[in-house]
Length: 422
Image 1: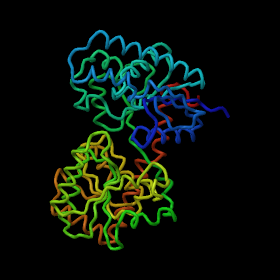
Image 2 (image 1 turned 180 degrees about the vertical axis):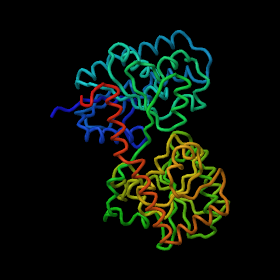
Image 3 (image 1 turned 135 degrees about the vertical axis):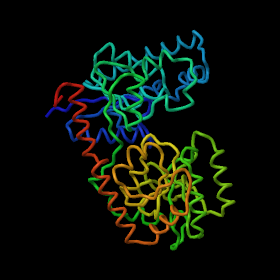
Image 4 (image 1 turned 60 degrees about the horizontal axis):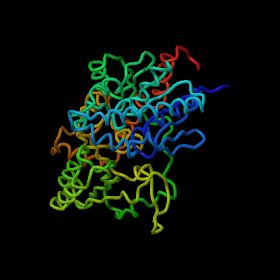
């Protein structure tokens, strides 16, 4: 049987960022629908046989960084900036033609590349390509530029209106939450399909194997310690100070707060503040980013590097006190590994996820005594904990599994191609 050929396009498909992870999930589900996926980006870790790497398409490419320095936070752009944006866009457009021709692509899936303007020339290139070819395409939007304050003052309102996202007759738009669906209709006058982020809940995680059996001891926990996991990067919008407050109010040195990721590209001021806060609150705060990676391997000292999936099953509680999330993958991961999770009721959770019927301790911007007692009961009452995590797993299967994505993708492909099979 012939496979339909779908081309995924973004600035990066590499690592564990949300866009890369969700794109892989889409590709896996599309494979079950008899579609083969090919990849176009500036940074790729896919199989070279199905990849088309164009370094100039990466948002960190020097020419794009030069452009970004001159268009954000400014109300005017020089003619030379316009020239260089258009020149790079023209070059990238021709590489998209080559990508499509090389692999015989029949439909494009644009992963956030016409959504968040990290790479304006790439967004323009895609928009021009669609206008010139009438290629059927799906734009998967994770976070729009108008949701980020850093893009609010800019020198390219004309280009943002044209390409982020474009209004193309054969372009189907997909958003991940209701607020995005409303704002896209209001700002661009286009309809969209809501497809939430998903996990393969139909395939439960395997039991902990020998490699991952010693996670707790390797990160320095004693047998009687309570492992509270914050499975996020160390950035202000994650609200990690609330997790420190929770552990402080639990009031027992056996509770250890463990953060899986590093501060990364947003500086270390927030991390330093958290360390100071934990010191003052006498909370045992640990950073294990050097022991968590994308793949299992050994570090320079011969110590094991674990994946996040190795770490989750050992946690007694997940804290997710985010102030803002486009969706909330860590919430789904906690449900998948049947770990109870504390949630700060960020807007997307309150509007999109909470009505589905999950049972979780909830805080509204601050940690209350009731939240602390809910958490304590979840940790100490095994029967209560198991009933809650099993209930949440069943709800997640119903609303956030691959079967939900499969149905939505069938509908999308029918809409965009006019065919049930390509």
